[in-house]
Amino acid sequence: MGAGKTTVGQLLAEILHKSFIDLDAKIVEREQRAIASIFAADGEDYFRDCETSLLMALDGELAAVYATGGGMVVREVNRDAMTSLGKIVYLSASWTTLKERLQSSADRPLVEQKSNWGELKTLWDKRQVFYRKADIIVQTDGLAPLQVAGNIADQLSIKE
Image 1 (cartoon, helix red, strand yellow):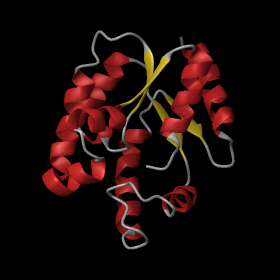
Image 2 (cartoon, helix red, strand yellow; image 1 turned 90 degrees about the vertical axis):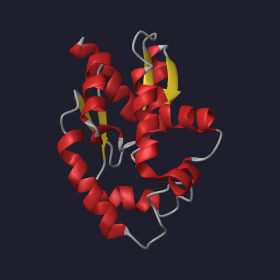
Image 3 (cartoon, rainbow, N blue to C red; image 1 turned 45 degrees about the vertical axis):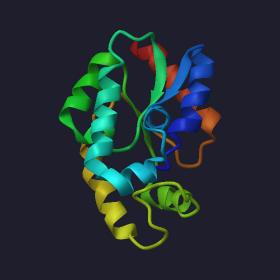
Image 4 (cartoon, rainbow, N blue to C red; image 1 turned 135 degrees about the vertical axis):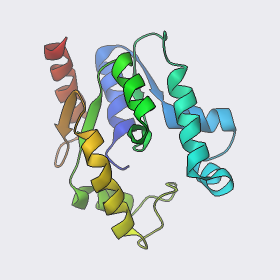
């Protein structure tokens, strides 16, 4: 959350001459409601089910750059599917950087403005074990999105 997945993903897709697909946006399109509304009405488990369903439907799709929600890695079935579909990239930012970015965000269901930073930090800490298993890890603090996308493109060419 707040790492720049969508912004960097769009730039990376341009560099690689691939399509860009934001899986959260696909869920919003399919459900015809905002993610915050999905969380409020049906809960996080339902949203995670939507993520898993969408991810499973990607098998056999053309190569593209996909941005997932930060919680996609929580389920083992999702991690397995992502591993089989392609390279996994983790945009690593310090907690301080993420908090700064998230403070101005109004459309993230797990962010209640300035009220649950401890909970969010705990969630972020718990997910690190999964994030750190990515094929490519890019530290983003202090870098412009285009620099991050270029770094990923360079590493992808090395790993292929």
